[in-house]
Image (cartoon, rainbow, N blue to C red; front, side, top):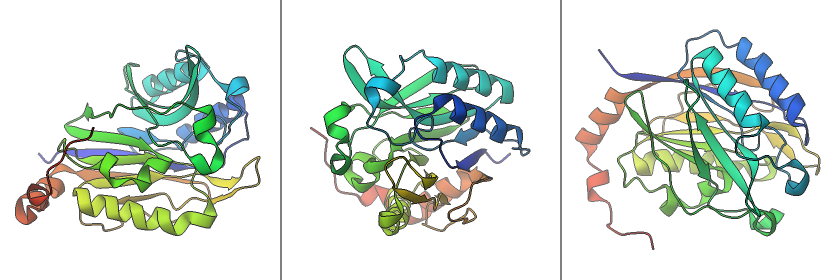
Length: 259
């Protein structure tokens, strides 16, 4: 039997710096997902929007948003992922949670903080990558600005799915489209990008362009710009394995190590 992974991308407006309203909104969205799914993907900082107001908005790791993610994952029997503002010791992080259906979770702290918006002045950068083994697929989650840096995404772990959650603004959306496709092609993996829509509290406009690309760079999701929507896409392990075996590109890649 073919091994598949069903992933639901959720493109949504975000209530500015209002975690309660955002959690309620996504709870309502989850109730409308009628297809069977294994992973639900939310945008970056899905409880607040891309805010530098960490002092006011940050939660402890086991705060309200993680508890909500765990409850929703158990309720809908699916993994859920997205990033949240977290305080740990005296430091703030843009932290992605990948919560499994049983409530256990793994985390990834955004590596490349967005200096143009001053993110590096507020949030500490992570230095650890994460690979999640889930239902026979290896998933590598990253966050927004990480997309611009291909070395950090380099497929040295034989992962199957590269996943980005983002608040990527309209003015640079062409880069988002091009780089998502490029990351899929160069890593011979599925590449998923989930972005938000709407206007944030800083006046930045977001137009979504959430997308799923296959290992050859073909767009396999629907395109719905500027609107809220969700879609469930089935990923195929056979598609990955057969194309890698036939084309063999990853085996010809330059060898290097990160220092």
